[in-house]
Structures are given as structure tokens and as C-alpha cells.
Length: 247
Image 1 (cartoon, helix red, strand yellow):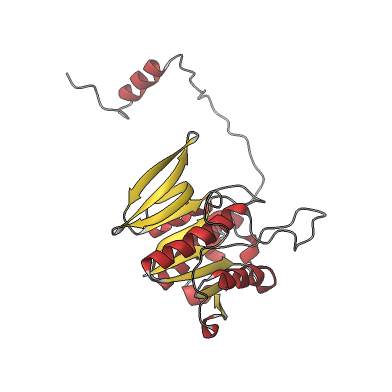
Image 2: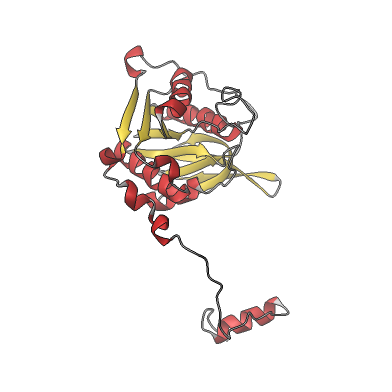
């Protein structure tokens, strides 16, 4: 059993030095919560980053200093050209290789703000996931997860395995839990290539084969605008998308 923590180096904006921001707020929150959960579960926390050493080793070294037992960097040709789904496939393969049953990552990066990686990785792993996580702790054999929804915090009790997408550092506890530092022998960053995960970069980027000149759709079918929710429900029943009401 392992806690996998996904980290990524924040990309500098034009004119901003690379060293200004290493981790965005969501990634800092993921590191904090992931380390705390590993401490409660009495297991290792392993940091995972996807990208070249020149960019990601600094953030992995930060994760090791914070308390991660190991750090894994996945790299390969064309890895920076992948979209979120290609990166999610890499993350899912790395999590499977580690045997992690708790995956913690940032809800959305400070630069791209897509919020797509966690749901995509969770689907590929066939794990449930929670976004907008503000905190998590062990409760018996399950996890109590604080989820931010509609301006308030809702606590969900979830079994493992699970993927948690953290939206910010928790309001209490600081930037890192008071976990003991791992032994010096465990401080090396392990480099994995795509081949080590059984992945092919060409297959991870299938959309490139579909690139071409966009053509407008032509035809006689027009969009139907319905005046109310009741009309929509009736239309869906006529098309047998929704069942008929019980008598």
C-alpha cells in the first residue's frame, strides 16, 4: 500500500523567472495532505512527476525534503507535447506500477487551470475521485474527505482506492506535516522511461494523426430549442432516452 502524490513544476509566465514559483497552491495542498495520509496509514508517500529532469527534478527534490520516501520522474520523447489525456495515461501506469491505492494531486495547476488530469487518471485507474478537496484523514479503514461545494465544506467518508484532487493547502497544519524525514538512502530520484511503463509515445498522442483543416458541418438538421424542462423531459421520453413514468 502506497500513497502516490502527483507533483508538477509550475510553468513560468512570460517575463517571470522560473524560480519564482516551484509548486502552485493546489500542488502544495496535495503534498501536505498526501504526506499526512501516508503518516496516518503508516506507509510510504511516493512523489510522481511527468516531464524532463531539467524541469521536474527541483519539485521532486522539494517533495523528498518534505518527507516523501521516494520520487519518480517519468520522461520520454515527445512527452511535453502530450495533452491531458496522454499525461493521465502515464500517471495511471505509474500508479499501477507503484501499487498505490491513494492518489493525491492538485485540483488544477496555477498556469493551465484545466482541472482535467485527476478525473482522467481516475477513470483510467477505475478509481472513484473527489475534486475540490480541502482536507482528508483516516477514519477506521476509510477516509474522511473535506470537499468544497457550493460555498461550504461537505465531509465524505470514502473507501480506498481513491483519487483526491486538492484545491488548496488546508487551512490548518501549514505547508507540510510534521512527518519524519526518510532515510538518506531513499532520497534519490528514480527515472522511468515510457517503455518501463509499457507505453508508446506515438499511441499517447493519437490526435496528431487527426490534425487537418477544419470543415463546417453541413446538412438540413437544425438544433431544436425547447421552451421548458418539461418539454425536454417529454422529448427524451419520446426518443426513449428516459423511461415512461410509472402509473
